Length: 397
Image (cartoon, rainbow, N blue to C red; front, side, top):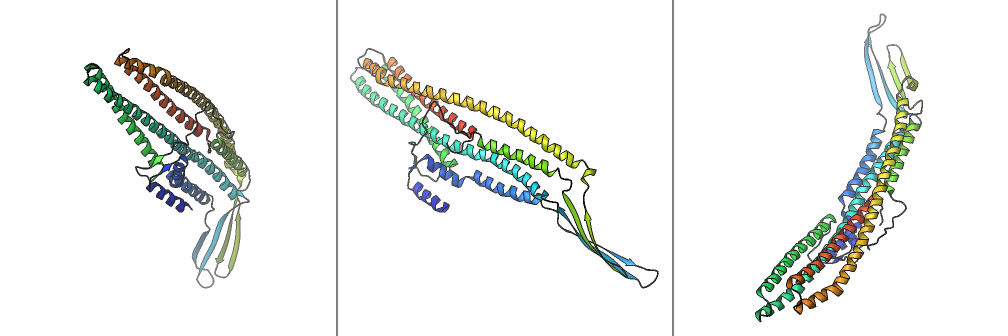
């Protein structure tokens, strides 16, 4: 199924197509080396856990002796046996559980990297869409001004305007062209970066839809399960200390069994032995229990501090997001009034000769400066939004 999906994407991309955010994320998910690395590390940790908690292999031992009895013939004597250490009760399973829980907690922390990568792609998608929109706006501005400049060239030819005025218009036209070239490069760079990180096969005809951008809102609703990965990881670490506490409370955790055969000159002997460690003769188990309790307490304090910091950062990001959204709304209103009311008046005044070319150019520049401020604020909004999603550890935004 995965191969079919990739083949369809490849055909679609090679012909030139419109990619949505969903397409970008799907391609990244199917080709993400980070996800594959975590999957392999999960298998590695599982195998390492089983290897580390396995009992030692059975031991084979033996001895040989040349006997010289006072009575009888000389002969060879030997002994051979095997011994094996066995876990007592469910000790081995508890050791595996302790390591498994810690490994699962570690992998949950690693999943944050995948989440951060995906939110980074979403942010990059929105940044490019804004860059492209900004480029189109700058291009339209340049084309409109070029049309005006051509009219003024004819006006100069008929001596309706001065050489100074025409030169000022030409300088402004060249400045706008430089900005246009810069914006074209910026949107190309953000597009190529997105395609590279998303592992997307593309052509020059491949474009992004940008119709599925996240809406700009003053208040962003977060699900109740914020910090889900951190909470689950902490839960598993606490469980591991609880299992460790029970594991090291046992008086016996292993026994050694041995079977031996002795061949002597005039007798054969068979022996069975059992060796049981006397836990009360050592403080090892006591110290292991203490370590588990201290670790449990330390994890609790660390988690409390981490959650305090995360909630503080979350509150700060939400405030910043609301501030950016309000600023965007204000800038849009200002631009609307500027374009609808002020610019036509200034243009009319300039055409009638009531205002100078400098006044006209300054007002145009002020308008487009406002537009650039709007785009910059929108980009900052989306950067903050996806930083918020990464911090809150929300898998589905």
